[in-house]
Image (tube, rainbow, N blue to C red):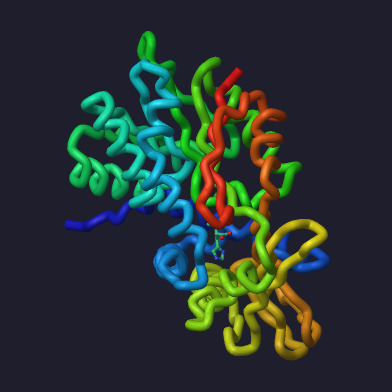
Length: 327
Ligand code: AVJ
């Protein structure tokens, strides 16, 4: 008897996207790689560790805002109707839980629709959340929300609340963020709400420390990208020959992460049959994390067809959670 191990289709599609992004990014000038490449299994674990670092204030600050205001957020979104909650991305763990628990407290049960391209991430989110919060029915939606949001119409009289929290939108410049929000709006009905979490501009040392922690976890997270290319594309990056850099670009209001080549070197990427030359000090730009000024997230919501309904922030004004209502 032969055992046929069927390839996981998810994996093939991802490999193809990885190959294409790397081919494009490392033959471009300046060199760049897209931040979604961070999140293989190892990278996702490293990101979880980042969220617990003393310097990485984002997660804990947003969680504090939600802990204080989740009831008010849910009530405001619902406006007396039944609410169903969707999330762009497969659940931001304990932050999402605060909102779902508030919805259950208000209406007894809630349908939660996490939207993600990864069926495995959705399956584990479903198992985890249904076990942890009685009253939540998880209905995973496998979809690339970058291409638009196609959710079944809610039941008669129901309202939808879409979560896009965690400063995930921070990876996109205005040319990318604006159409993304417009596509989300197009999938909603007037009255439905979007909850957007954005990181705010603050002093440079605080910003830089959040992306250059003392324990070096963010450096590992950045360098794991090269390790991933070694694993998945048979590349021969020497991780010791690259350095993690985090810089505040004040003009563009964003934190940038780069990987700087410590020496002149050549790297081979076997699966692409590609040799890549690096000059000493040359960098690969791996991420932008845009930081907003007060009012900017609201303006962005308005431009995408949402009426800014309310913004919640922390006492230091470090992070903002903004609700927009579809017009
Ligand atoms: C997941 C995009 C919000 O930009 O702060 C953390 C990713 N990069 N440390 C962010 C990240 C470096 C994070 N986001």
